[in-house]
Amino acid sequence: MKLPVTHSLRGRLLWFLLAAIVLAAMAQAVIAYRSARSDADEIFDYHMQQMALSLRSGAPMANQYGRGGDADNDDMVVQVWTPDGVQVFRSLSRAELPQRAVLGFSNVRVRGATYRVFSIQTDNQTVQIAQDMKVRQRMAGALALRTVAPIAMMAPLLMLVVWWVVSGSLAPVSRVRKQVAARQADDLSPVSETGLPDEVQPLVQELNLLFGRVKTAFDAQQHFVADAAHELRTPLAALKLQVLSLERADNAEARAVAVGRLTAGIERATRLVEQLLVLARQEASSELKMDDVNLADLARRALGDLAGIAQTRGIDLGLHHADDAVVAGQGDALLILLRNLVDNAIKYTPSGGTVDVEVRQHQGKAVLCVDDSGPGIPAEERERVFSRFYRVPGSPAGGSGLGLAIIKAIAERHGATLVLDQSPRLGGLQVRVEFPVPQTAAHAGVNLSKSPTA
Image 1 (tube, rainbow, N blue to C red):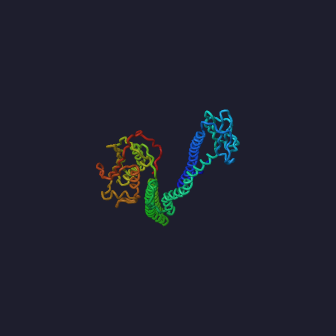
Image 2: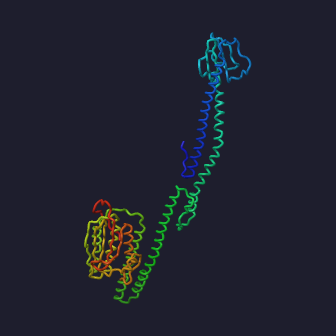
């Protein structure tokens, strides 16, 4: 038979504890009965043996049957024979025991009843004592009942105590469940840990930590949406004005100028949306699958992707130094970091300037540097430029203020350190990203067949 199994901790505890109490009481009853039966057998056997020894005498008994007593009393039967087989004494009883005695103890079946028989023989007589086994069973039952009765009376009280203890012990868990169930969707405050058992408290602590992480992510998402809505309002308003200018243009030259401005506005808005999507995707990713990534190979790919833009602006773009540095990270995300670094350097470097990329392995770290000959960033502004949508005053138009924010988000997810400084060689800005090198690199090169998402 399959026992019912509940998924409730309280139900399981009550079910198994109450079942254990019932089984223990039943086992106690069985053990008590067997013990009482064994004790009764020993007592009655000793009593029969002593009775037989007391009837033993040196002279034969008179040749007559016993009289008196109750003929219906079959509990104890006594018979005595002479050596020649003549029965000289027999107690009044309806039990028909065998006329021949087996010396010692034996069991005899008579008329559906079992008798315990003890026989002893002397020189002048044989004594046989018999007792109905039902007497022993009644006595054993009475002894067992007296033993089990306290357990039987205490079992319901013990069950009530178990019920009260289990329910009281699990009451804090029920309280936590009610607290969580009564919360609104945006209520991420910590759950009270007061009075919780030691086994449940770590679970609630982890739940509070999870609430804290979700609240941080939720707040960051709200700020991101608010900032994005604010930043998108300006380019959309500009696009609306440019469309109105195009409608009012009265000649081909004015329409061409309006179309050019509209196209440039669309490109800036497109770039802003792309950057917003990249930043949102980087911040929303909860897991980062680490692979061995060769920074020199990524640097070459990024330079190849942006070589056309650098050539159009007259920028000397190149890989100044490249060590075979391997780091643990996500190739696509690190390629986005490199492309944003190089793209920012090209954007803020005057025509005819220089942008160099370096990959070095130094003192157990892989260092990625992007140097340019542009105006750089003042020291007091270097911390603020990592904020979303912040742009250094006096910067040329066209930027979204998200490039360094994206770079910082990717660097932090890879455990890298991001440093802004003045380029000692080119005089402009130097962006240095220091990666921890894995203890054991599986291989120097990695499969970078996937196209990066910018």
